[in-house]
Length: 521
Image (cartoon, rainbow, N blue to C red):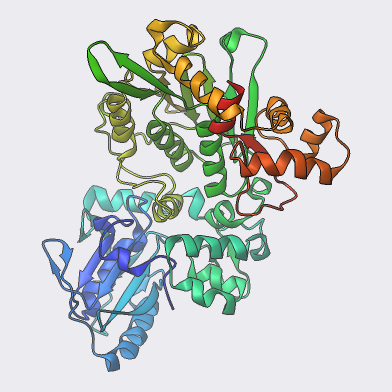
């Protein structure tokens, strides 16, 4: 039974933090039991962890090729683990057990998800007469027995399973999309993709850790609905990203444009970022007297925007009915999410890029985002934003939340050179040389564009459907529009489809590319 991730990545620590990995050279039932208990307690809401049996560890890293386990012992170990789950841990708990073969050696991978009924306690020894139990947690990359304040805090977490990891009793298994689940497995390179067509939707969901509950009454987890439901807003009404763009007058003016992005969490995030990248990000060329090399800067570095948006999606609370809001104003961009960071985060530490939360809000969302390489999940988002702004020569990013930690805001100022170009409409020589260069390119390209394509580009504003474009051009015949306008514009690279993977989708829309904007210049 494969894991819903690429098992080889576990040995690289690429998408799973080292503190969530435990390598054991051989089978030791008591030590393994205590580590299972610690990962199930998930003291820091990191999403549980993985125990790899049959691999030696040296200085915290796996030694390859693995020592491996004798093939004839694999079945016995799995039976013993099943027995331990019923008789040596309270409440009972069972990890997902995955036999695997690495470099020709047999190993066992135990996927231990954060439990729904924590805190868990395990037997201190495996004697039949023993009735003494203890709580275990992870401290860094070690399993330790929880005592004193740690034990008290663990017990206090009994009713605070993170919202994304809870069963959703208002939903059904059928609300999950097999296509979206298989698409995810393909993207992360999981071997489970090959078996998925032969599994029922419930079996596939349980294997991916997004369906739980008893066999007779299974329920999807909230994270499953967020990731793999085509219409997650039915269960989380304000799970969306609002992009609000104010023109030169700013928020005090009468005009602004608003674009709302909904859908499965990865798609919603990608669509919002793609929209910002296509419509807002620009590059300014700064020429220097006496130096041949020009400096190129973005108005706001895309890397900083991406980190800020993904950070907001990852760390917002999905039981709070407030969207992630991205406000684009003449001189800056704001990314706002609700509520603010964990109480353990101090504002001065955050601004210095040194904050590390005591506990994560969305342990399962973070796990999926790391697999999709949206985020590293190692508290690197804020330092990356700071670094991206510095490398671009931009003013520093600003971070803000109130005393109640009710919101979190990231402010990204526009680069002064780009702002100067904007204010002078790119016509002032002190603002750089971008307009003359664009004009030369436009002159070369425009002669290769038919008048019909130019008419199309002139009416295309933002993202529009075929029908909307036909109506604006006063064209009734679809065939004529496609052959004379749409197809040449696509083939020339002057416009692009929004849903590239499904060209014939009834929801298809089109937008102007950089090449198309050059023609309009």
